[in-house]
Image (cartoon, rainbow, N blue to C red):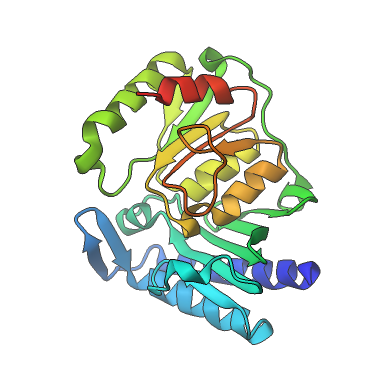
Length: 260
């Protein structure tokens, strides 16, 4: 089953990514779901393509997809569920900033067993299978070995409702900017987490993420040897409001900086 899941999801991610790459330089139809939360025609085109392709091979699986309005009750069932972000980094895409990705995860009996994140602009395909490792373009990847925050390059993102929690968000940001060697904010949580898995970043934190933002990439981090938790240090799951990911060696230091 896992082999078929991997082959189907990988092929689908590549196809959806090609669609986004083709649409990237074209005029966009931009709508707002919230003040800082846009959606484009490409989000819907990519999502429709993904659901159609996956349904052809796995007709009984449920879907939890960002633009489908599917309920969270789709998670945790006894059979299969696809968790999809058809365009992670929509703000970037809409502004012509080439940092975005397709994210597809397969959940089976309550656990994410496969995840793929495809960056079509760099043609980088990150994937992981539960218990079998993580890869970038078929080559094994592993998290970094930095042990001190002043040697670490971190990544973060701001939630769409950041203005409602601005003081706390900026306090955490300020603390880690002061302690780390550098902090980046690329604008795609899925790519941030995959860069962590590949050793390009040493840590990551963000709040108010959704299951489709994290499902595939968190598995990739874990299978690459990283650690993932909530801001409180509790085990992270798909319904967690906060996420901290690291190379494991820096996790305690990052958690301490985030505590307010």
